[in-house]
Length: 514
Image 1 (cartoon, rainbow, N blue to C red):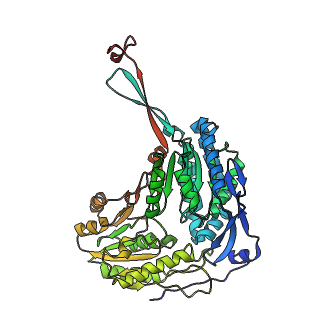
Image 2: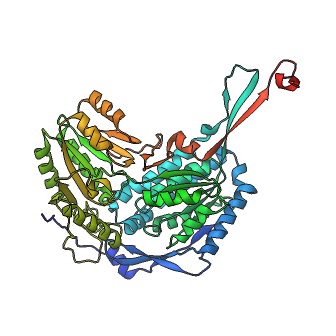
Image 3: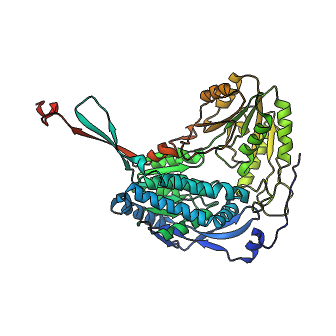
């Protein structure tokens, strides 16, 4: 079945007109407190997936730039001002970054939209404010790393101190560039580390603008370095460098395995937030209207390009037929169009290359016997954009490739179940364990099921509630370590135990052992 396509006419202020008439922006690297052109003089193109047009040139870091960033971060930690500043002073810088994001919200939202294909409504009301809020949250946490006194029976003073790890390499994906940057930079910097942030070559313009804005703040040299590169060599060099103490990576599980192997050189501290194949469990006693809306958001927001996407929909057999009919009808009415229109509900994928990958999964699903309920085609839009219809499969078996592998696109696999035990078995029958959703008015049952699911986050009667105060991360091949909350902050610290003898007379037993 084909979906409705809405391609809008634009006024003089449209992104398409601006692309045709404006000078293409150029973004440089941010290293050692300064904006720098790449030493090799190369830039790569940023392509708008709504139109297939180049809208920016991004500095293409090579090995010389990587070494420059590494040396700046190492020197900044070993001999610089940033780790010596109080946590309160560092927090003030984070609050200033948040202020810059808010002051430049429109330009950042436009670039995030142009880079990712995410709708302008999404980037305006979710991405930019969420990134600002994350910097604000951590900027207001100066008391979170205070020394702790541990009560012990021995006559000693037992103190726990949290110290920065050192030089942190943070590597982010292309689906949520601003938010992922904030999730990593805010806690790592607050803890006193110096950081090298490496963007994805896809969809990084908004982060490079953020770097340009941060350059105004006068951060101590080496505290923060932000680089972009078109190849994988820069990431490999950063992760394997002996100058690095910790790597924080978000991306696919396959790349995470490579990062883990490379980070083993020097036994670096590591956090991994990787792929997902999240189950979305709908019980017959749910609020059907709310569940349908939530299930649509869980798979079709950001065109399904989310690690927590609810891509496996498990529907209790009592309401199965009614539910999938209503869900399919709603999906087919989504307004497909260019991301820069506030009327668009469903924009393009991040690139044509990624769309081609998703199409191969769709073809594979049909080959293995799954049935297309709707979508699965490139919509008839007169543009070079990377569009794909919202896609729903039924007659899916959980062993099929489309039900086991992370597609990272707008492809939903629906399976029925008849009991709690069956739903939990299907939900846990995957190598991933990032997130899950449960829809039921019976909260006692929902919480029972939540405890049986092997994943890091469970949403009950909602989806996508990422809270700065609460940790986020995965089980199994979805990675390890946590982001956000105090637990996420502590990931960027080392724990030191200091023991001071308080024996009356000043001589502990060990001093007279021999």
